[in-house]
Image 1: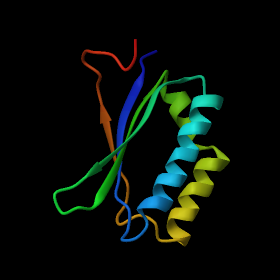
Image 2: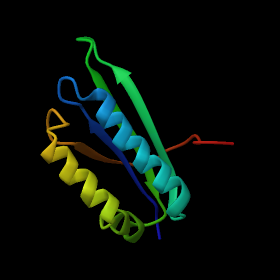
Image 3: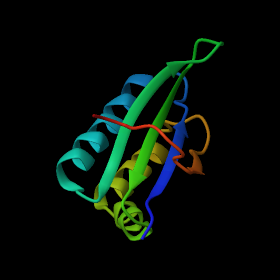
Image 4: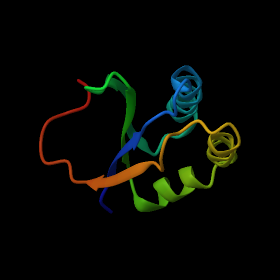
Length: 107
C-alpha cells in the first residue's frame, strides 16, 4: 500500500483571510489529534506578489482509503459548506497530487 500526497492551494476572497485561516487551523488541529493515518498535514501561508494571501496544505496519507475517510468527515463537509455560505474562498481549491521523491517532514 503506497502513501498518497497532495498539495492543496486555497486563496481567500477579499477580506476573508483571517476567517479562512481560522477554519484551516481548526482542521489542522482535528487532523493532528484524530487522524492517525495522516503522515503529514502542514498549513503554509504566503503572500503573493499582489499582496494577497494564499494558503497551501501539504498532506500525506498512509493510503487512498485514509484520504477518502478524511474527505467524508463531518468537519470537512461543514467547512466546505461554510466556504460557500460565507463566500470565503476566491476560487475553487486547487488540489495537486504529488509524489514525494526525497527528504523529510520532521526528524
